[in-house]
Length: 89
Image 1 (tube, rainbow, N blue to C red):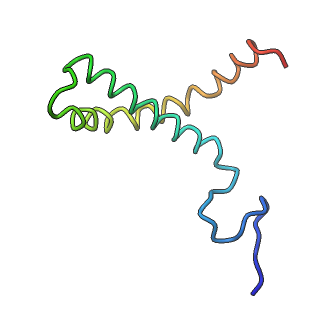
Image 2 (cartoon, helix red, strand yellow):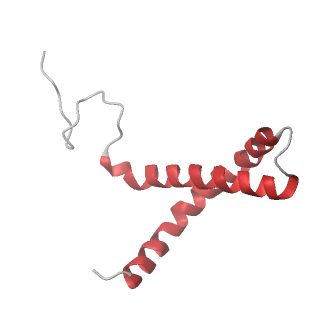
């Protein structure tokens, strides 16, 4: 049986995405983590850490995650430009 490889050298049928999706995958993970953390902090600040806290966080997260994902995708070019201005090459 022969192993078929893609351009990036991974095995065909691998669960990993092609490298061309790196920016979108980065944006997804960044948005997912930041939206969850911000939802938890804001819910805790507004209603406290009491009964039903995780449910309230999840309800806030359902709204925050898609918005955060779009924001990360839209803000990335500006952020990269600011980083290139700020950091020495």
